[in-house]
Image (cartoon, rainbow, N blue to C red; front, side):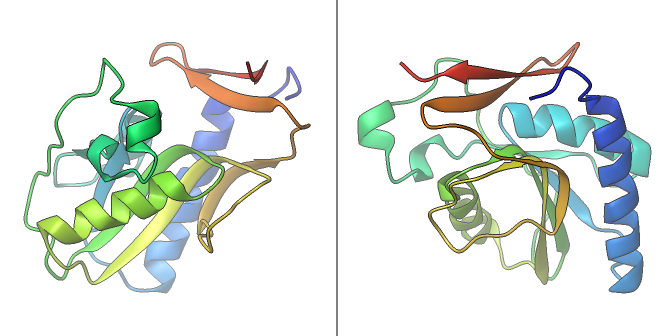
Amino acid sequence: MDKKTDIHLLINDMANGIQNHCKNLQYKNPLMIGIQRGGVWVATQLHMKLNYKDPLSELNIAFYRDDFSKIGVHPEVKPSKLSTNLDDRHVILVDDVLHTGRTIRAAMNEIFDFGRPASITLAILIERSGTELPIKADIIGKKITLKEGEHVKLSGPEPMALEIKKTG
């Protein structure tokens, strides 16, 4: 990742993209949901910029992951908090990094356990190469390609910073 990646600029671009997306599709009063942890950090910034009426909702997808038995539960994960009924709502689902697609699949499984939204728009800060599932983001801050053995991590929440690390 180049040192010039400005997260606040990416989030501004994402907010504009979400606003245009919702306007074009005539979504009124969408509900924003951040995936814990990094997705909530990004969603908090987007939620403030877009001035949504409903409080920001948060998803903890730890128990919905298909690799739960391998990775266990992250010690800082908090329970999900959904601010309202999801039925027939247009949901803006926010996460920090889209890689394999497994986190997003798990998030959608949990969302449908809480209700049946009218639609789900996926907003991602960083989309990296290597998606394994047929999941594509609607709003993307930045696309990156990493070398074998590298992964990108968002640290934060204040200040938020992106870094590329070697696996292992």
